[in-house]
Length: 267
Ligand SMILES: Nc1ncnc2c1ncn2[C@@H]1O[C@H](COP(=O)(O)OP(=O)(O)OP(=O)(O)O)[C@@H](O)[C@H]1O
Ligand SMILES: [Mg+2]
Image 1 (tube, protein in one colour):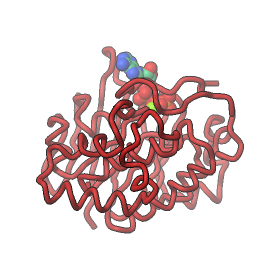
Image 2 (tube, protein in one colour):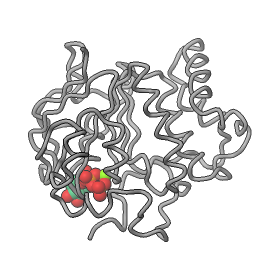
Image 3 (cartoon, protein in one colour):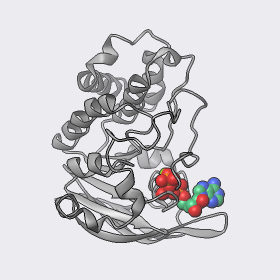
């Protein structure tokens, strides 16, 4: 089976290796979960795979080609799309225009088929095409963010924090979409603060801590043996029905392209 193969990835930030020698396989047609506490290096890993940060060492192999250190457009073109943590829409543009922005590099035919596909995945957006992004609910905004990544019909989709700032009922509507994307053949890497959400979708799971992979195995092992989730963070925040801080205003909608670590989740 084909896969996006990360080998020995090391990424430095502020002169410090915050991702260290990470090797992970993201198989096609499956969801792979990446869990870990605040500051583990999850977002950094995703940014490095997407070409936003340049890895210090390691390879990102797809079909025998090494994408590590390539430019983001080239990586996207190769079929790898990322949804960075806290990704925002252009608030004054309509849904239609936000989708158009995401498809500008595609041929007219591919843009059209991508648009058709994302509107099939998110029928709700079809009713909201002329609405400006700032008037959308948090859930609708997250749908557009996902649609922007999916419009290029990527072979691999890396999602950094699916449920951030969203109500449980909204998260429960996104879950089947992620499942459909994987079932249609894409490889999905899902970073998710709620371990139960990620483990419910994933076939394989990896736990990252201190920049390194500490556990790799079947998601079902972690589901059946929650004690393996040794980090207190993972246990405490593992269920979206039981949010740590329901007042936490981490709703999408402010700013553009923020990739800062999510506030308010550290112990
Ligand atoms: N721009 C930056 N400059 C220097 N260090 C950074 C920068 N961004 C993040 N870091 C550091 O890199 C490490 C990894 O951060 P990263 O955001 O990748 O973790 P994470 O696992 O995504 O955490 P979270 O669950 O909070 O999103 C942390 O120690 C963080 O402080
Ligand atoms: Mg992060």
